[in-house]
Length: 395
Image 1 (cartoon, helix red, strand yellow):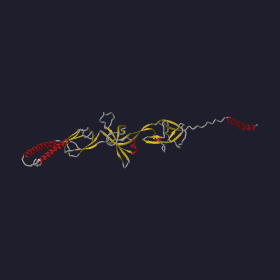
Image 2 (image 1 turned 180 degrees about the horizontal axis):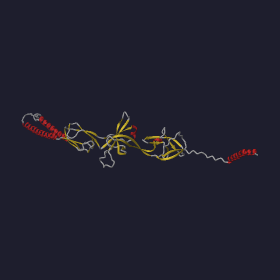
Image 3 (image 1 turned 30 degrees about the vertical axis):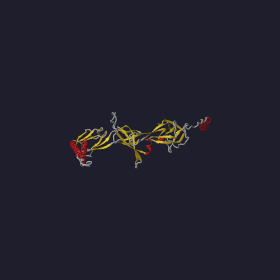
Image 4 (image 1 turned 90 degrees about the horizontal axis):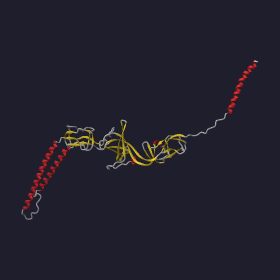
């Protein structure tokens, strides 16, 4: 009995395991395989913009330094001591045209006028005397009863003395005019609207003719000399030098203390030459009333001061029906990537009409309404499946 019981203990677990295995096999065989789903390629996710074909304006950007159009050294024209100095004769002082800056002691020049007037009166009296003497000599000659006496000579009629008296009168008049002119020169006036950049003299100093007194800069107009690549000139309206006309309009700006200030200007002329070192052309940008003296000042309004470094944006020629794209969208070989109507990649060559700071102007190869790809694609190929995501309309 014990042997039979031991066999049951061995066989029964084996039998249970065998039944369980047969059940598992039956379950697996009875289960249906899941249906296979076809794999769909969603396409490569790319960012696109919708292109617009429209007129654009060429923008030329440059930098430069503001300088006065007119700047002169004020000099003394006569000798003397400075007896009067304008209260605004200080560095940075502003003057209107014709406003008095300095005065040299005029007393010596007033006395010179009195002496010249006396000399003129004597010369006038001397001329009258010689004219009477010449008239008397003529009458005496006419009273002579001589056969074949003919016309009297110049010495008989005192013509040399008369000519000398006329010359003395002219010299006396010239001396008087010079004395008056020198008196006028004792007053030194602003030659144009301007600002005193520096002064070299002060009250009580003795100055001589030709001595520099001050450096005077105009305030009616500022010029900014701008170097540009020669190819940029084709986009600009540049008037001829001396014509007085204004060319392409400009916006002059400077970032000062975190605030952007702007002034309006225009192209005034070109220098007509190429710099040997840089191979750049130079043009002049003019800004009227840079110190804003001819209009009421506004809050946060500052002058376009001499020496200020500025950025310049020049409005060039208007370009008819072009497409503007970001610079980064142009691929090597002057081609662009487009997402076609089937959301597939199209590689297309284009012609770049103009390269601007951040954008390119395309005149051939693109049309309005097309989708330009901005995303970089590794291993790009025509017909590649895409998943475009529009960002914005190109500006």
